[in-house]
Length: 231
Image 1 (tube, rainbow, N blue to C red):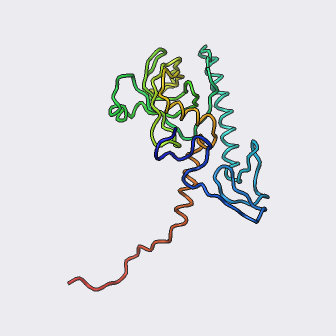
Image 2 (cartoon, helix red, strand yellow):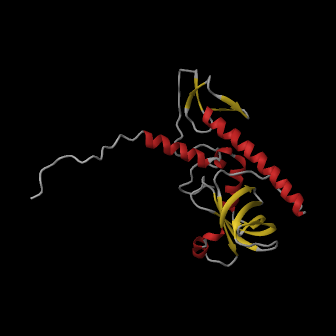
Image 3 (cartoon, one colour):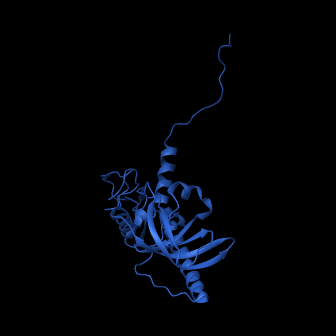
């Protein structure tokens, strides 16, 4: 179940803001499966069974390379720290997603004011996540987590337990947390993120929509013109 203001449908992954039914006789062009721009088939690239425009294909390759490098570094970190991975579900990345974390009991208002506890999401699953947050956290800490996914209008709020924590330096902690419980709506959003790549890459889709909408605006001439003198 999705809330008002969400960017993309969680059931089918369709962009709700700019979804357009296109019926073209010219079969030499197709819509990019990622950003819906119309591109010549000659320029299209097929990746994981989806036709992508050159820009989206480049972004996806870059994401895959970054993901592989991140996983390599994570394996090295786990080996050095002696931490065992006990994931119950496959993790995935969410583009430009951040989390807010705080000890349980802190009010939502204070949580939003506590800027030191905001950090980037590393990866996410239906049962937990990995993030880097400012502040000190220890294994066993019970925390409140807000996942700020670009696809959704409101943060996903969960109660979680820190399963492992490593000091990253500069007052930051890299940690893995396991969700203790979530309401049905939040669980539905997590399931949707897992199932649909479009939801996980909503940040890029929103950027492209902003560029297109800005480019379509008429030019505005703000130069001052001579007018009648004031009385």
